[in-house]
Amino acid sequence: MDSGLILLVFLAFLFAWGLNRVRRAMRLGPVAYAGVMIVFIIVMLAVWGQTMR
Image 1 (spheres, rainbow, N blue to C red):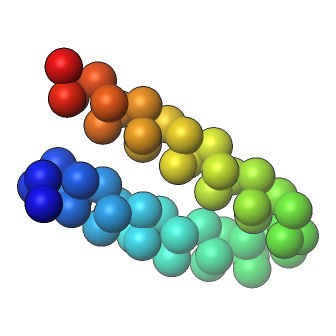
Image 2: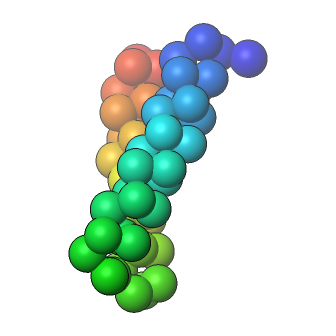
């Protein structure tokens, strides 16, 4: 497995954990949480795709 992809998976878990704490503090709904996660996944895939060139 590519080491960059492993790092991105780790960052995704770290981001999800932090976002969950922020979501509880700000009382965001599940739709806002899902929206932020989808945007994060798209951005991380774009960054990973750029490094593959």
